[in-house]
Length: 139
Image (cartoon, rainbow, N blue to C red):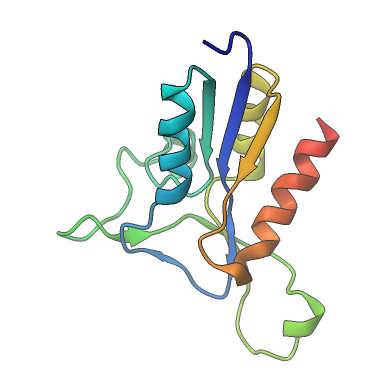
């Protein structure tokens, strides 16, 4: 048993022009969590893309997220400034997932981690990874 060795696993936000939940889950990160748990590590997990997050549902005045008959549905989104390289694309650019405030509140409630693992389902979603790293470094 790895007493008091806490590992924080994070599925970060998506920064993109569009995103929709077609049952997307960070399977690799969840496998790692399972292995670490079997080895006796304490695990904390924050899923910035959790459409069923209670705080985001409360924020949106909803009991359940919008979904179709198969459970698919839109993520909560907040429009953000586009990176300079994308400025000429005539579409709105957004951060998808829970709010930064909800993320910070979740982070502050957790025991201090000795290691942080962050995933990214798509390589071009790196802005979400970078933002999570930026926030964690400040705390």
